[in-house]
Length: 303
Ligand SMILES: [Fe+2]
Picture (cartoon, protein in one colour):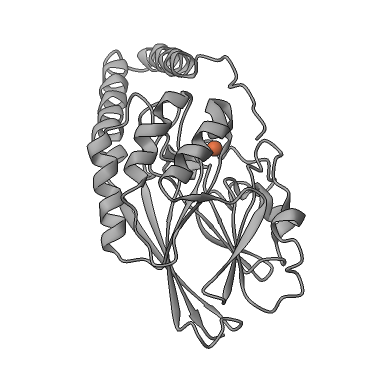
């Protein structure tokens, strides 16, 4: 397993610094227009910050998508997938809250649970508490995972081992056949350039059975489009902060059409791409106009 080091940047401090500097500059500018304006700006910023940190960051949304696949074998009437991503277990994580979400997922009685990486943010000491919580997940055909860039920075080997101890298989540029009917493929993190799509799809291009690809980042859509039926990804957090009329400030992909694939269901040729907004946060423990997400995908036979 390849190891990389997390960039030695103090994200949180820098983010606060930039936000404060921006608000101060804005206040000075507005003060010239009206002496009361800076107070209104700070009150608005404080209110939005409080809402994003205390309410929206914990306000999980269940997003449901349904697609038809003509190639689905007759033996499978319907396949229900629950897709989770980007837990980012760190000092801000409330273990009880995550456990509640995971128990809620198991209660949905999914056929498969797919986890698209960034279980950790920075420290591998959280690998055990995170995977112990993930151990409550139950699905008829199993729970599968791929790793994200933060898992590599924190320690991919320990994370893979800890997931395995809970019966969660990491698909590291490989594939498995589910129910004799559907290929589930997984690539290592595309964001860090570790994805080997040819290895993950090795020998399957001519196979008539449907292919589902898991990848941490939607970056892989550039090469996977047309070669898989469904791509499930995370990484973007949906932008985490989405300003009205502006949209996501950051999508963290290397795609030219990164904003297009930042969240939700999109298409690239015949490939359906679903990018999950994730459950956790990075940089700042805040979400705005971008709720954490449990993705539920139902696949049925048909056109
Ligand atoms: Fe990521």
